[in-house]
Amino acid sequence: MQKHAVKLSVFCGVSVDGFLARPDHALDFLHTGEQVPHGFEEFYGSVDVVVIGRKTFEVVLTFEKWFYGKKPVVVLSSRALDFSSVKGGVVEQMSGAPAEIVGLLKARGFKHAYIDGGVTIQRFLAAGLIDRLVITRVPVLIGEGIPLFGAVPRDIRLRHVATRAYEGGLVQSEYEVGATLPMSGSPIPDAE
Amino acid sequence: MQKHAVKLSVFCGVSVDGFLARPDHALDFLHTGEQVPHGFEEFYGSVDVVVIGRKTFEVVLTFEKWFYGKKPVVVLSSRALDFSSVKGGVVEQMSGAPAEIVGLLKARGFKHAYIDGGVTIQRFLAAGLIDRLVITRVPVLIGEGIPLFGAVPRDIRLRHVATRAYEGGLVQSEYEVGATLPMSGSPIPDAE
Image (cartoon, rainbow over all chains, first blue to last red):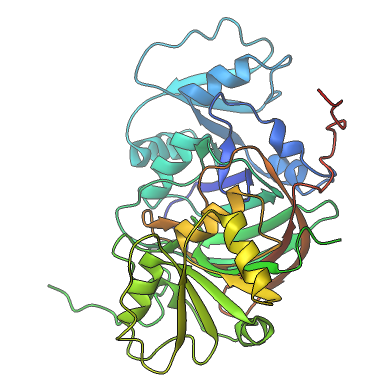
């Protein structure tokens, strides 16, 4: 049973010490070791919308080519954004709390959203709205940067689905996330 | 080729978001999910000395029983420690920079040290003195606590040795650490 009709997934690469990017947003360290296909294309083919924050949007704009192709991209921001430099992409803006965003995505008929970017992932995780987490760990410690994880209002139990190790040292773990997952050892609390 | 005659290993459990313990040092979350043997006994049997910091020592003192059995334990601290409450254990104190500690361990004839505790692990990693890192990730996010990793003076390249997934959701990755490992894509710098 899903909590909502839109599935929300995270698929990201991090250093072994948990960083999505360096402090200046550089991603060079993700190429540590041999690069091998590790399922991103398949994952990307399965989503019908990408949800990112303003910061990720600004970083992506610095890339040579629009990263997301023709896939609809939602940029979360409460302030006005300039989409004029997005060449060939399909971009729109939304704002609101994660639950509101999920409602908007659902109303638009989206079925599977790719949630990306540090702040955005953290907000949706903290709100208990992420369904699936696929973390690919790159064999390097970088010491500082933009962390994948942040504060959570309470423990979030994960269910391990699968882990795959690749030539070159990438290790990818897939988890289901959900407040409804049983906490081992925790009795079901009485209604208060 | 080893950098030194004493091998230094880390073998630890962390939440998926990278914490060794909660802010109050509680370890309850490590028991999330089913508990299955994941190699600690075998690892512990292979070390001939345990090296911990003062904080870990103080936490271990609160345990019902001396955790380290008859294994020699070195507690790192520059201030006087009271070992009177250690019942049945073999404890001594050392102080100094990680490289000095390695020299002392080597002089004592130790061959394989188990480096434990957040600050201590971070200091030895930053000094480039850890040989092997075995991280067992417990399927839960706790959001805050004592992190396994900290600042490093430069990127530390890891070599993935093996990853094992266990019933109940534990995922254990083993890495070799070493400044001498080749950095893919980084040419060997000229002498300055």
